[in-house]
Image (cartoon, rainbow, N blue to C red; front, top):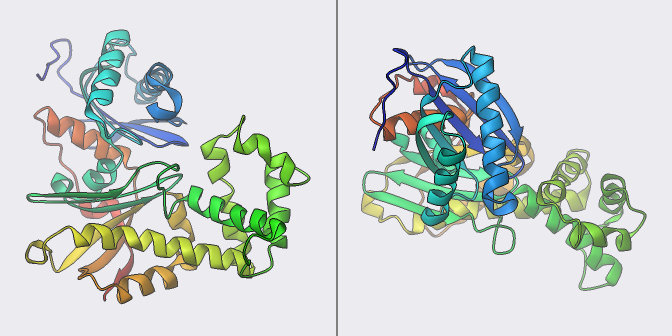
Length: 344
């Protein structure tokens, strides 16, 4: 049930887009303009637990209100949260209940869902389109009238193909297997080996054990992807092979959702919102990604790949307002720029 505020005429709408590594919050006014913003650490409840995650969210809200010139005790009309790992309804409800119980002054109305929806509600009215997240982890979702299909988003133990974690894991697996002589390595692994030593501050593979066991931190581990991308940009053959493999796995998500949408319900073209840090290396990923799409036996619509020009927290705020009966004005075309157009 939507609550209203009787203490102020103006309404403000919060939006939080959270991943495993970092989180952004914005506050919109009734005209859809960003009037406050804050940033903080990751907000994935499966990594940090509900209490710690909500503590982070509360601090983000307090900081964003301060940035907007609003009193901390004045609740926002709505708070939309699109967070990594927020797929399970029961867990989401528990998280919402905890936030509203401990921090009732944060917002009158709260809506929580997965991080798939922040980019979609930022890019298109009603959140219709396709989103392919390739950040610390990965996920893909297509949303249209009567269609809601997802592929991925199962975490690094079961998936995360095409993510920064996948880049780091694939590269390091080559390093470990090359030294163990487990199979054949497709190219010299020395550059990635040296990069591993520098990044993780170890002298050999034995030093990596703490990063793989007792002190495993997914954001830290996935961060090694940046080193691999840099090596690929400098021409390292093995790093380039890793990015080719991962790019194909990114494209596999598009193929997977396309398989599950009947051909007679597929639009001629799909706008694909490309979200996450891995897309910053698009120039290194493009060839393999495009080849996979073009060679797929599945009918795939023309793909207009777009990147957001504003934070997906804007879409989270729009979603939260929409769920509680307020349609915020938004110039969606101003929120995206075209990255690439691909056809089969």
